[in-house]
Length: 255
Image 1 (spheres, rainbow, N blue to C red):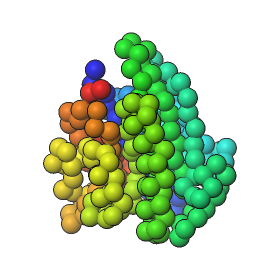
Image 2: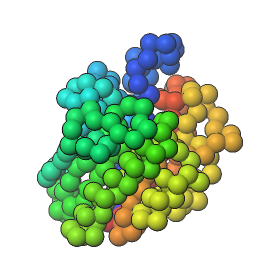
Image 3: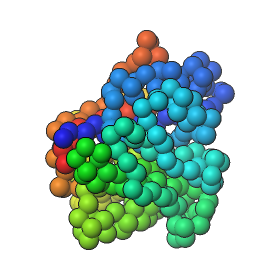
Image 4: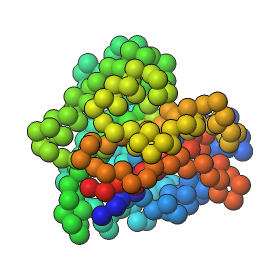
């Protein structure tokens, strides 16, 4: 089976965004997801009211994850999945810090609490299990990005090497391909965009549409036992509306 996996930075609900504020974009976000129909969507920057809006507009999906301040507080790295096709066998969240089990914890030079949400999913038809990790690395601290990526890999690697589970990591890494963070992840995982020669333009566009001179900061990585059949930056508008200030990334994979 080939599955679509999407990562999507939603841009948080900021009243100062004016015409680009969330109430003017929520329908376009939901419609884009529904049209692409991925099996799993990892979102970043979604606040609880935003995710409730998507819940109502995406009835085929269920959601897991909590805010970075705990429960419903702060931005989420939510994982949406097709509830008719997948069951969640386990799920959780850890903080990118020296105390990853402590809610809201911060370490290194991070500017904000950062999180990674994970889920063990099993297909209802083929009973194939795989794991998904969704994160949003710090936008300022290079050490925080590096240590956060190392922490995520330390968790993922046990499932890949010991449990022999296919694993996917997605998210806004807040750095471009030449950064040590991306180079580190590429030594352990497959960069889906790069594997298909699709990493030559940016994913952040600031509601302007143009990514000229930019490179990706949003990625989907996977373990080497997953075959990537295609990957793309979804640089589309919906009825002339940019769904976010980031373009989502969509990869099709065969387990």
